[in-house]
Image (cartoon, rainbow over all chains, first blue to last red; front, side, top):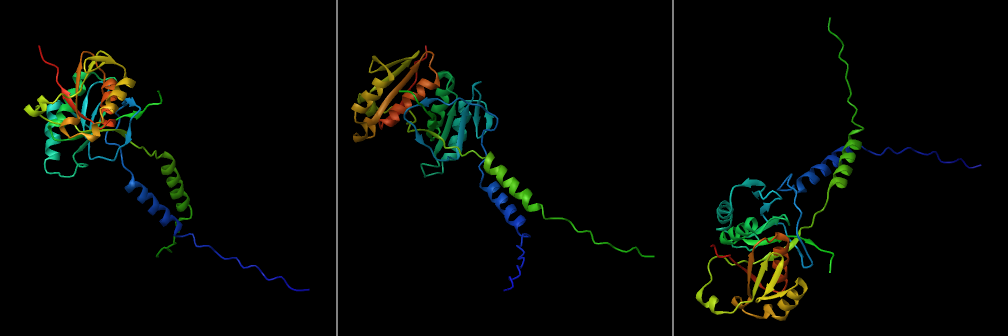
Length: 137
Length: 132
């Protein structure tokens, strides 16, 4: 009767597993992009003709209460939006860097959003208006 | 008399478990948001004399009503009319579509019109309501 070969236990080195896992966590944390407008809720308008938008460096936002935000910070008036956009845009040549992501609540009235849109245009910004695709029609 | 030092070993075998649990948490908690919308080239400043001479199509928004060249139409019809203008084939000045909002207009209807102009290849120019 032949003798069965004795099984050898091969230990798997697991000491470096923790290092790998923590490296992955650090990678995820560095690659994450945090929202520039934390805590502001907005019902975006909808339309059937929307495109995918890139990640633009400037964000102007108007919330339900008609408060204007520039880069996540409340800002007083459309004039200040114009100044800030102009400051940022004046030395830029690339159209993408001149584009301002404009988010506005669908229920906001014309007397609030129109001066802001005008201010962005006057400041030299190109407007990327955020909206959701609609399922109607 | 000197006390005998004892080596205390820290157990690190559960470190990787904790780390992988954190990774799983990050992966599950992440939502990949794709921002959608429309890009609008809104010209700044006043209209020049040569631009004033051009008869640009005008869209008026007035309390929920849409007027295209002073004729009331609905959103679907507006898209059709704008497509018929064949704006992408025209020069930059000729691609201008004037947008005037008056009365109680919400951003929803304004955005819808801006998106239609943009989709038709037009350039939105905002007409300010005359102050009384």
